[in-house]
Length: 94
Length: 112
Image (cartoon, rainbow over all chains, first blue to last red; front, side):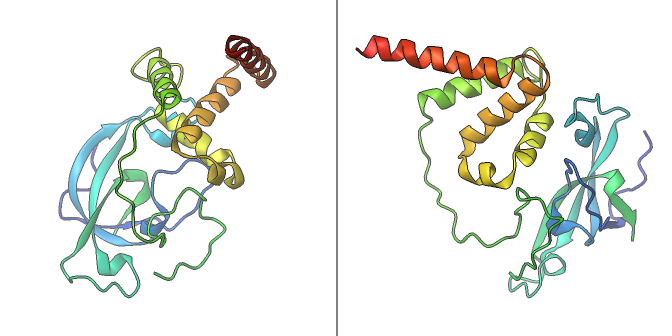
């Protein structure tokens, strides 16, 4: 499985709302962050949720977002971040 | 923070909604909660592999908001497990109801 993204790359989370079991939280959809690390390849939980084998595996990334980019009127420190584990099929180059 | 209601957002997907302060109190598991967790582990991915965590999560998202809101953590996990087993044909709702009735009767006899 080839990794389309490397640590430091900017990515945008897909702003989409398909029905079914989805692993990307609502609050992070459409936001831009940076790849913090490649976590590895795992069976796709969005398929496992329906009794399928989840293959081929999907690459999971840890993506780091600035809190002020995630929340409107964020009042914490400029440097505050939030890390979210997101599968590759939810990410676009940014 | 302001969260415009979006019907496409799942009722379980509450990250960032304002529910006030989190109560950090640690509570003891009740005996039935331990038993339910043990059954879940024995039949789940680490045991017989009859179902996986992702299926159980999907069931929580499928049981409907009224039931989901009504149940606590362990009730949700037990209900989810039941939904998946009925879906997979391990038993029917009717068989489960009959069995629960039988056990309730037996327990009543023991108490008397």
